[in-house]
Every structure is written in structure tokens, then in C-alpha cells.
Image (cartoon, rainbow, N blue to C red; front, side, top):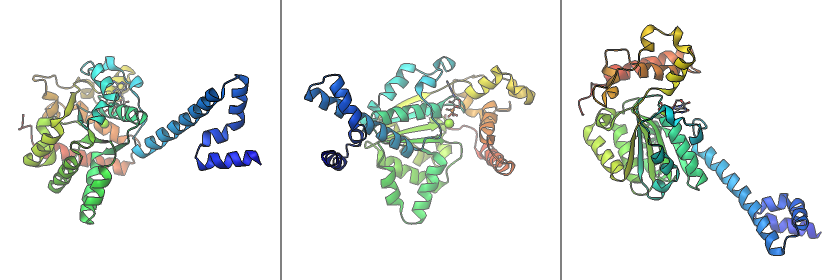
Length: 317
Ligand code: ADP
Ligand code: MG
């Protein structure tokens, strides 16, 4: 009877860990000859541990990361252009507390999404709400909401997470209306919540990505005001690994070549216009081809080709 009463009270207070482990906790307190104060402290610790675990589990589910990656699994030696200290600082989450933006820029396969996920997961551990969204999905959501007259609702929703990660901006060019919608999102979050954006395009190319240099400038103006810009200059980790294990032998000979070497530090940005078949571009296709059916792989290739040939050569540097 007394036990039932206690269970009912623990239920009402939502102290589910204490409720579930009650007998063990009481035994442990007795065995260790804890004072009442010490025992209470032990009980609270267990409850907090359970609540943290649940919060992290739920927060991670809601964030919708594409894969599980942590900083421990990131090989910094393979990417010497990255300042390890700067990344570690970002995982501390201060940029989120200050509502600052992070731009992770670099060619495909260098670990931008990996780092974005790692930073996002750390942010959840630190108690922040996080949402991860691929740029094309985000744009589609905004366009749909706009056409249904529910843009405001969607912007409010996207304004909620403390950190919004927008992945792979620039693989597909935006429609003009999409650029305006994205601008509204950036304005909404400006100085209120952090954004982490990964892109395979240099900032100078964002005019092309958004299809409108004026909107791109307005977007960048807000993003760069309080920001951390990290540019990764290196080879695709995936291709490196394949090369290391000899898996590229079945690809055409030109795949083995290194990407066109930098005459200017930013020249890899213009891979799409390079005369050498672009290794990074191929890497992206390989990435898309994983798990694809022949039909949708064909569509992906066509879309990638469309991007490749519709995008004017860098004019904005
Ligand atoms: P990007 O987003 O820049 O195209 P990803 O982050 O998707 O690249 O990286 C591609 C794959 O290679 C992922 O599985 C990622 O975990 C792995 N990867 C990339 N860079 C590294 C690295 N430096 N150390 C460990 N794994 C890496
Ligand atoms: Mg990526």
C-alpha cells in the first residue's frame, strides 16, 4: 500500500528513473550506508541522468541528421587546412548562445557534412535544439508553404531550433523565388538563432547559386555579420580512401589524376569549368549513385549535368 502510494507520487512528479529503480536505489543507499541527504542526492542524480539521456535521444531524433558522425571520428590529419582548435571551439556551442552563423565551405567529400553533424550532436548534448535540413528540401518546404499561403507558419517553425543546419547549399541553383524565400528565413533567424550552412561554392559564387546577386548580397550581409567562415581546401576523403584501398582501378584513367592544382587558392571552385574532368564532380555522382536505382541515378546524372552546364564560369571573384 505504502509502496503504491510512493509509486503514484513518483509518477505524478514524473520521476520515472527513481520509480523504476526504486528497490535497487534503496538497497544501494543502505549498502553504502548513505545519509538521507546523500541518498536523496543519489536518487536525483539517477533521475537527471535518465532525463538527459531521453532529451538527447529525442533531440537527436528531431534533428534528422543524415548519419551519425562525431568529432572523434574525424581525421584532422587528412585535412590540414582545417583549424582543429576552431572546430573544437564551435562544438563548445558558444556560437549558438550568441546566435552567430557558421559557413563550412569546400569541395565535395572533404567532410563538411561530417563536421556539421558532429557540431550539431554536440549542441544537443549541450542542451540546444537542432534541426538539420538539406538545402533542396528546405527550399522545397519554403516554396510549398508559400504556395499554400502558409509561409509565415513555416518560417516560425524554422525559427524555433537554436541551431539550423542547412546542408549542401549550391549543388542545385535556386529558382529566383526560392532565393527570396531563403532570404526571409535568414532574416527571421538573424541575431535570434544560429545557422550552420555547408556549401561547395565559395562566397563569391553565391550570386550564381541564388540566381540573383542582390538577394545573395542581402543574405550574405546578414550571415556574415556575426560569423565563422571555415574554408576546407583539400581532396575528397572518400576518393582518398578508395585510392588508398585500390578501389578506383575500375574507373577511367582520368579519375586517378589529382584535382586540377590551384593556380589561385580558390581555383577548385571553378572545377565545373575546368577542362580536366572534375574529380570532385565525379565524386558527387558516386555519392548520389549509392543506393540509387538505375532510373533515379539517370535522373540524378541529368540534373547534375544540367547544373554543370547551366552554371556560368565564375564571374564574381
Ligand atoms: P562533404 O559534405 O564535404 O561532401 P562528407 O562530410 O559527406 O563530405 O564526407 C564524406 C564521407 O567521408 C563521410 O562518410 C565522412 O564521414 C567521411 N569523411 C570526410 N572527411 C573525413 C575526415 N577528415 N575524417 C574522417 N572521415 C571523413
Ligand atoms: Mg555534404
